Length: 439
Image 1 (cartoon, rainbow, N blue to C red):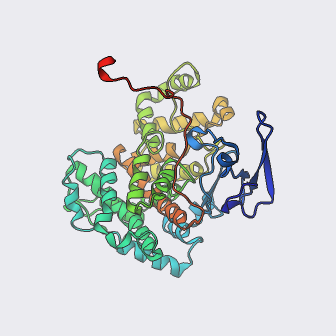
Image 2: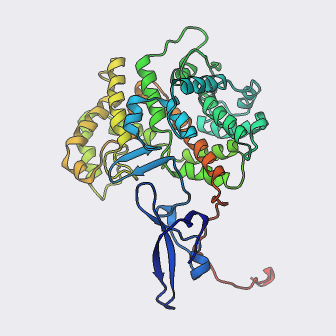
Image 3: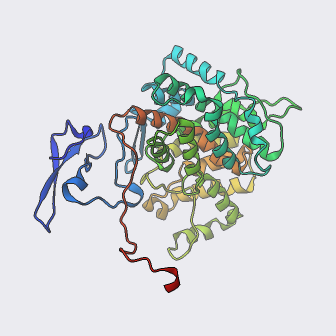
């Protein structure tokens, strides 16, 4: 019976039969802590001469992880056993970062020490500022993020030994701490304003908002309601199992690439509109609708299978029920709108009325097309004046902790191998090369 190190303790097996030869092979059936069982096909090619075909790897488990669990049918998202709703109500982003790196939530002393470490690492090397000058002034902030984060290994070579646990810890702290600074600097550079340094008297979300919106000419006071909403956005986007960007980080890291390079690869994957650009697509959709009076017209277009129009921000690839993160952010969304006194901003009026219609419309209810986290985060970010080019940057800042924690888990996993997917070849079979004068 084929076995891999991950299946050593298996006591159940699934039998596959090749009907062309009559050969049967048993494969270990592995239970997770929760969710569906998987069967270990590590020896499939060796035993049968076949391998699997799974575009997008939607039915393939590429690793073992103790970090995040999603049940899309039930609308469940857990980090290390804690429901995301409970974390959003009882905890904050810094506590979640600590937990993803250290297995459990911190006590008061542990949190205090962790926040201090992150705060002390929030400044970037002064020479890094010169790196920004190499970019075209109007460059997209995500293009700058890819380049700058990839270059961090040149500025911090003392923490790229992936086999040293202490260096991995320092790298994790540096990435989490510096990403808001790097992101805010990318924005300031793109609009020609001076960089704003981080401040040790502000918390993580407050610091980012201050670096984004402050100018040297006058004092900037962070609205506590907006800071709370920003912290929640960070918390809700921190990790989401083996999504495209996280899988990219793991795949790059499996080659032995340093963590800065691996996270830069994750940023590049996140940049794609099918992954990290959904909340920006929400605003583009609202702009296309243009007027609240046209909502019924566009809802009917969305229902028409022959119409190319799509309602962005409704439903989710993973969640076939209500996105649990959306429930949390819905509350923050209305808190922000109330705190800012926004009553007649056209796009936000459309969003609020579209939300109300979708929650009552039988079509949306039957199809389970509920407003998702991108719908509410897009509204919040629009309301606080965040430019759309920064939406995916915010996602990258939040997801950095998930990327580096998953990367670290991968490095410590004795079963982990170099990522090397197979393919189903459908090209030409062997043929001779004809000399050029005869072609």
